[in-house]
Image (cartoon, rainbow, N blue to C red):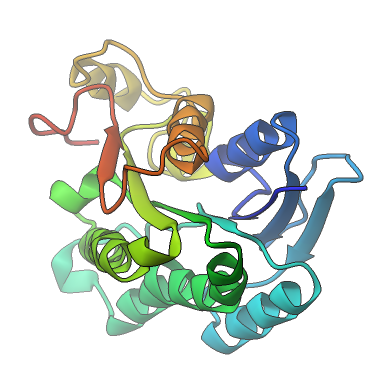
Length: 240
């Protein structure tokens, strides 16, 4: 049975992604701060703070020793919205561990299984904010680091049948991160909507569909790429 490791599968994009893999018959391993709510014998849930580098590496090695995965999807993320003058190095360090360090630890732990199978799919959830977004110093910088990871890994791992790609979502409603910035009843909703060429906010399912495309065994000729799932907002400017 195919096995996928999905971080952040307790809610939002991670949960939608885990559901999509479950429908496709995968065994899903969830790694998140909270338990995955999916009730299935094919779902294994482990709670961990992915900003904690040591705890993340320990959990990754433990899971890989028991049930190595040949597909890794890193969805977990956090914003820490602050203007530059209020951004603390601690903010950057925490998000660097969460967005970049966790990705490295998770892939390293499962890479032997991928190489042995001569097959692997790595998908990192970056953000449209890699192109720049006010009050996102730590977030934009560390999410941009994910693009560097997949481009580098694509070159290193192609001979082993492993692809590495990123998905960069734009404004995705029905997620805790989005609602922390713009609550559903906020007057900012209408202003933000006007900036989206597609005329609507994205949903976690929109992002999950992109992940499934890149993680498909048939997508073996796509690697080192970043797919923006943003309703067209990556083409111009956006403020929200």
